Image 1: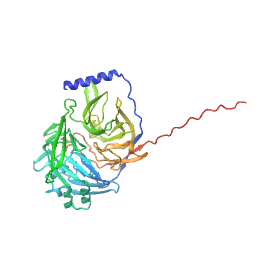
Image 2 (image 1 turned 90 degrees about the vertical axis):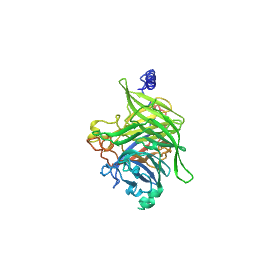
Image 3 (image 1 turned 45 degrees about the horizontal axis):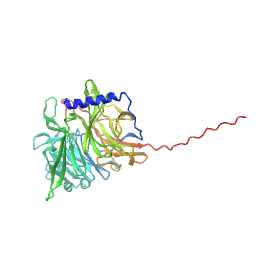
Image 4 (image 1 turned 180 degrees about the horizontal axis):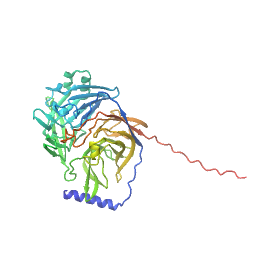
Length: 449
């Protein structure tokens, strides 16, 4: 471990000893979560996919289905889902050959993606390329006009659908399992892994290069109307935060600025530390919490910010505190989920990490994704605006998909194939009704004869 990082952790340890064993102050809670099983017929089993939504409908791209053998279970369909009407439409991705340079990028897994209004940005991802006769992380970003693409697929007008898919190439886009977001006019591509070759632990023939940096770039059209990429800045955080398997989560910080956090767990001198990097404009900070682990690996994540109390809640569901999870969870039947981990960023330290009980539900796969209801008040980076939600129970979205194995969930691990699931859950948030203050009634002394 680098000296600078060790010194920073040591300073944090000294600070924690200085404040003693004072228990964390629990923030006042004003919401609960409920997760209930739902049914959407004709959905394929799927994990590691990308998703967007427009006008109540989902657009799902890529991922692994456990169904197709030719591309080692790659999802070869562009899928449109109307969850309210229980309808599913599909378009073979091969319909886009000749329309964009790399159709295979749309079938990749673990791509980075971001939605801004009616535009969807799909970047990188890992998959098979006939051109290279092998597997790689694709150096492309696909920009999709959601309205036109969804309407064309529903109408089965696949020729027209091609008008709404555009691609731009950049060598630095060849990454998987990173994070993509946008602040004002600039995109942020964070971390991830450059991956080439076939991931098979019995016969490994791959190259794997983790990234620990942030690329800022703009996407602009030239005079001919062709998209071009312009790199504007970059920042390498490996000196401060050098973790291979982190988790990236959009955040709104107590001062109201949008950004993101990178979560990790580590051990130092026999103690466990939950660590995280907060990135905001302009700058970043590194923090640790002693004797703690955040179950962020393969977790379903729901970010919620309360502007009134300045509390940023990150909910982790069904995750593990180590990348490979427990053996029985990976290879056996997954247990019921009866609790969630809530990490709360506050404007006054210390932050808060609490495990909370929830209504039990059976989860058949890790890495299931939360699909936020687009009608729910939210920030541009997808964080829910808790203070804008009505009192009572609101459906804030769905949980869909997941994988049966997380070792390592890229095709096969040598023995066991990572099977996908088509499980769907409704996710509800109940905002507690404010209790009116009850005036105390003065005691009346009884009359005594």
